[in-house]
Amino acid sequence: MSAPLLAVDGLRHAYGAHVVLDAVSFQVNAGTALAVVGRNGTGKSTLLRCLTGAEKPTGGTVTFDGRTYEETSADIRRDVATVFDDIDFFPDLTVAEHLDLLARAHGVPDPEVAVDDTLRELGIDGTTRQFPSTLSSGQRHRLALATAFVRPRRLLVLDEPEQRLDVEGRQWLAEKLRADLADGVAVVFASHSPDLIEAVATDTLRVGGDA
Ligand SMILES: Nc1ncnc2c1ncn2[C@@H]1O[C@H](COP(=O)(O)OP(=O)(O)OP(=O)(O)O)[C@@H](O)[C@H]1O
Image 1 (spheres, rainbow, N blue to C red):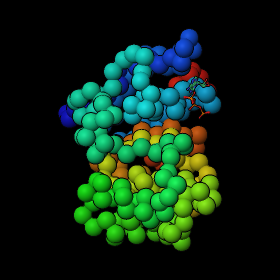
Image 2 (image 1 turned 90 degrees about the vertical axis):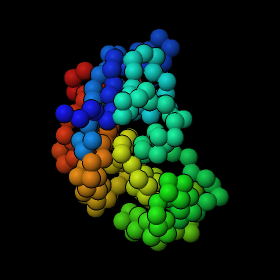
Image 3 (image 1 turned 45 degrees about the vertical axis):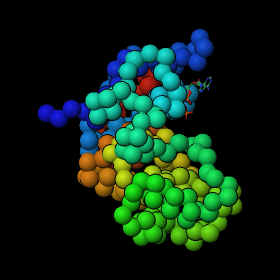
């Protein structure tokens, strides 16, 4: 059996005296999707932030492809795509320029085609010349998703990717994630959407006790 792509062992995180995560362990293989579920404030975002190095866990280990997860490692930056709610866009770059920058930074062979395809798939091809601050909240979220899908990835970490999407957007997202799984991408996503979880997750991790 192949080694897990992502392995989390005994993860603990506290904000001061407030212990949010304790003894969290799981593994995620290529081509599988783990849904992180639980009530508001139970630690889903904290867990994802610990996975990606945005938050330094107060205990436990996170390994990616057999190596300790280091946010600054070139391998991690190449292989792990993330979408969080608080993504910072460059105010002076247009929608298309954001995606073009990412596609080129990740060595996408034909960046212009990749950008056009991603914009069209995400339904934001009418916004290419707009700056992020002028987008609607749903369009901004679509741009955040586009930043993950315009580039190669082996692991996708998504925090409530369904938020602010309309019905069609949610259907598209489920299909896109299923296509990624079929391509061998591993996915970890926090979600409050039973439909998305049902459509995509191969495993579920509940944080914070019973629902
Ligand atoms: N930077 C921080 N400093 C102190 N406490 C924090 C910080 N970030 C989160 N918390 C607290 O940690 C707990 C978990 O927060 P987190 O955002 O991980 O929850 P969540 O499960 O993602 O919630 P939601 O479903 O509402 O998005 C909450 O009680 C929150 O108030």
